[in-house]
Amino acid sequence: MTKVLSIFRKSDAKAPRRKSISLDRKKARAGWIFVLPFVIGFVLIYIPMIAESLIYTFTDVTATSLKDGIFSIKAVGFDNYQEVLFNHTDFVERLVSGTTQLIIDIPAIIIFSLFMAVMLNQKMIGRAAFRAIFFIPVIVTTGIIAKTDLATQSTTSEMEGGMESGNEAQQSGGVSQIVSAADFGALFSNMKVGGELQAYVVDIINNIFNIVNRSGVQLLIFLAGLQSISPAIYESCSIDGASAWETFWKITFPMISPMILVNAVYTVIDSFTAASNSVMSFIQDVLAGNSANYKASYGVTMAWVYFLIVIVIVAVVAGILSTYIFYQRKET
Image (cartoon, rainbow, N blue to C red; front, top):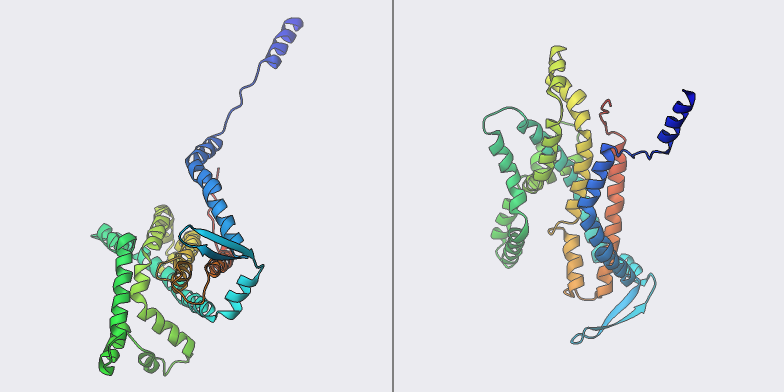
């Protein structure tokens, strides 16, 4: 009997074992199959282009024959970076002004989109129509419509610049601004509010159209996060007697905090790469040769400096917000 058992054990030991693949690994493999075309294109197309543009920042590119497309390349080290950052103040001024404007716009866009997402998440008649209305500016300001809008704005600004009448110029300036600092001066006169906060509120109100225009994607992301919260949590809060204010700060805000991080990073990148961004348009003009006293290598250098600044700002924003993010752990 013992010999028979030993024979069966040896046969079981020699039999090959089938490797079982977990569901997570199957999903990971399927995910890599979907992103494989992008990875191949990124490695074969984008990485060589990025490396070539980085090399151009350390060279002086001169067109010897535009007809034949012949260029001469001369290594200059870090001279392009020194020239762009210290000798050409136009780029630095636009960079500082654009970054300062982002400090005003990004918190306003996040707060407005979160507020509207909470409002549109409530049960009401025509909720789908209101959601579509807030997303319409995202569709309208893309593609050919956005280019047409920019061309119209440039034509309008040229026509307004050509006006010689002081009254007409004053009227056009009054239309472009909803409120002024003097309006809030009387409101905050009896309150101990500094001029910086007053100027911040004035800038937000005057840019309310731009803020609403750029909040569509963030609003949808917040809506998706709000709908992922279980209604049972809100029911337990109401049974315990929690108010709507307490429920928002104790339940909704912590559980929606990952979406705040996603929207903050998205808003930073979208604001820095928008077609209406003054720095982006300036770099494109330099690369196209429309700006005097600027070489093509200067435009590539400006683009890389701008890219590094954007990466640093995104890392700072993500690092600060990550310390306050709450991730719900699901029991397995």
